[in-house]
Image 1 (cartoon, rainbow, N blue to C red):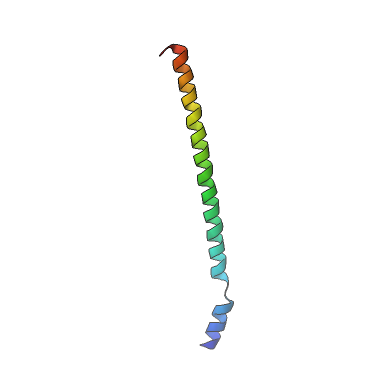
Image 2: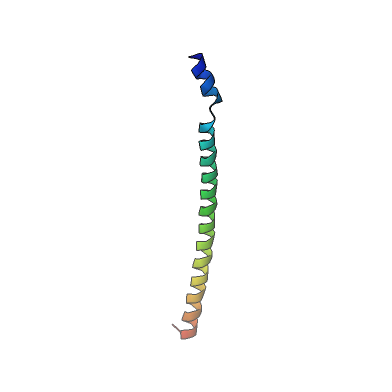
Length: 59
């Protein structure tokens, strides 16, 4: 039993998985922020384009 506990204490493979999970979560959050910023800008651009076309055609 003591051997098993010593071996378990030296095992770091679980820590590596947790670290990769945290890195993946941070990348995911950065991607969400980027998509939100892009979508807001795209909506603004298309609204401006629509307003310009409506004003030019007198609609």
